[in-house]
Length: 313
Image 1 (cartoon, helix red, strand yellow):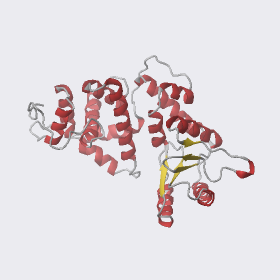
Image 2 (cartoon, one colour; image 1 turned 90 degrees about the vertical axis):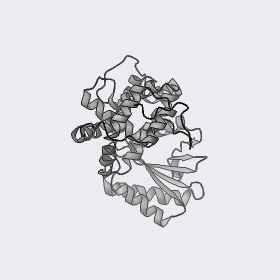
Image 3 (cartoon, helix red, strand yellow; image 1 turned 135 degrees about the vertical axis):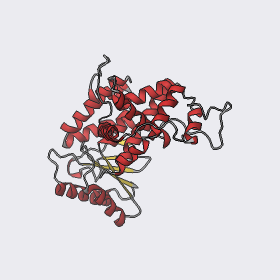
Image 4 (tube, helix red, strand yellow; image 1 turned 90 degrees about the horizontal axis):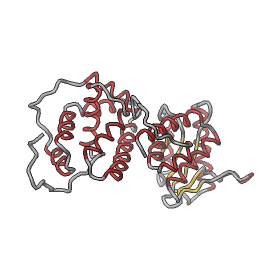
């Protein structure tokens, strides 16, 4: 899928999450997960029998999904629905699942009550796992789809290139944080040798290496930003999205590191040519996920390049 097509799908997905409620959301969720995994069972309601405590079941990984997508959010109603769904699942689906997943399409993120509900459920039922699935995780599932599957969910996808200022909307506040807190370059600062060996292993060009090395002085600000968020799961969700997108790009372009870096930049920024300070902030984000092995391949233990280039950046 072209980058412009993916951005169209992202906008269509966000619109869907904003406008999709109740049974309509459940139908969308069923369609998405059936595309994603042949082991997913889209459980429907059948008269007085109901759905026997599940809006969906993953056959092989033994996961049970419960959807909550009201038109108007209410914390008390959400807790009541969660407890009711869990009680029904435990009663009517006993022995059929190991993980209970609460699904909600709130683009603002995870409501503070949900982690509390999950933690309390784990205390009461230590033999089961409890997870949430919000917009970021749903988007990560959408990103794994083929073009024809996305068109089934969102309609025809145009192929005409369109200019977008920000590719991944979740990273816009992070870019602002980096722009405000970046420090002047120190050309004498030491460079992490493990990262340089990884650059050698992935055969990064001199230009790519320079971009990552330049980003090393600011990459700690990315972690600082996420440490200050109320939603501590956001970093892992964004990192998972980066990893998934990196794999897709690598499958498409092979080992062409320059092409991969360009696609990852567009994943953050869109395809609009950015100002220099925004481009430098983007380099810090890419370096952060490079250093933590969410993008590019980690060399095997003890691997060393046949030609020593560690000092050449």
